[in-house]
Image 1 (cartoon, protein in one colour):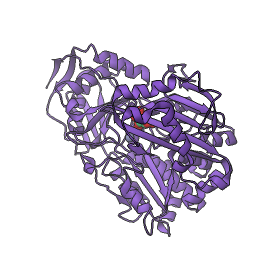
Image 2 (spheres, helix red, strand yellow):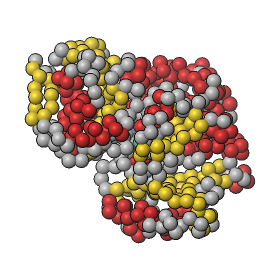
Image 3 (cartoon, rainbow, N blue to C red):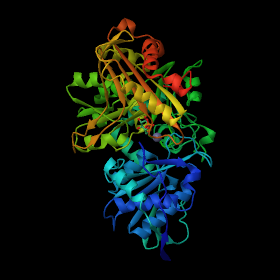
Length: 543
Ligand code: G1P
Ligand code: ZN
């Protein structure tokens, strides 16, 4: 076996976005494209000689090929050991769990999350640091810098590893351990939740459906929900992970998880429904004919955390991404704990969790998690809810109604306009910026505008500053309209409009969110010229 130095040339556009580098599979399949990025990563993360790298992905098309390249490059670059999930599988939260548990130097996670998979669809790669969390911006920027002047990479010349066989193997002087992708994660879940109480719940009248959407959580759901928790076989649907996710779009929201939505809104609906995304970090929670917004889900978890064994002593603080509704802020205030508002993307929660300043974190984009790992965690959120339901013995709807009664309701919705021309999308935001000085003090949608700004964040732990994280119109009554461009798309621009309106009066808590926000929706379009510029008369996705 020999180590080869391969000459290469930089590729444009290898800057990691909100969550790693995401491109079409065809882009990743170009000779040297993936290797360049991996070498740039290895060149930017410090001295890892003698250390362990964790590698795994969501099982999408090109996962196995990518893993073989990465393992051979890890060997050539001086890692002592690679831990890889059997079949190349590790959900994103499971990868985070494994990195932490085995004190790895870091990990490479292969995923484009909920983006469709297959030869003509998306692939992605991201680097997570030793804490188990996504690399901070300083690291991702260093990686990007390196991709622009890379001239060679190192790779071992040797046969592929058999990814389907668990055990320890040697590859070019490096140890490769193929591990069960579920066991470590399942052990962690058992340490946090009252599995006996959940088992009892599932053995009674209560019924549930978990939709793995043909993606990575299939085996996790089968082992934990149907295996350890003994839910009836068939509780986990679409449980077989497929390289193309069954041709679907595994994003657990009301639009793309329609199979689950139809079940929960159909006749004889189960009491609880949940879904996770391509790589297992997102979650959607539904009750019988009831949708829980991710923002509310975070708030309910925070308010009920002490019912769950892993959080019985209380939570140290909460963090939410800026566009996420302020529902959690109200719970934090009642509990007398801090609530942090961070830019979009899980990487901004890492420092706060490492410093012990927050326990629970959440994003409106169907992401919730805690400091048990450093990624958002879909199945963890489902188990958290099951634990609450097992203790409170109430329906999902009644838990939410009770919550709104106590804290008021933050009506919330996000409207996405996908595949918009990039220049037009920029102009939509610019139109709002152009009114930053004139809007405050005026009325919009029957509400008084307090301030407008481009959201900027100073990390309270390391002082790093992130600018231009969303254009905000903030109202006196706490309502908000926010415009942001997606950082995870692979073609054109996606404009996200986030709408929020607070209602304290419990007589007015029964409205449909789109109705409650109707005047805000109209106002958002009027001040940004969104529909005119995008050429769309309605959003692609409403969540
Ligand atoms: C989206 C979500 C964001 C999430 C990210 C990764 O990013 O909005 O909350 O952290 O996916 O799952 P965006 O496309 O908005 O940049
Ligand atoms: Zn994801």
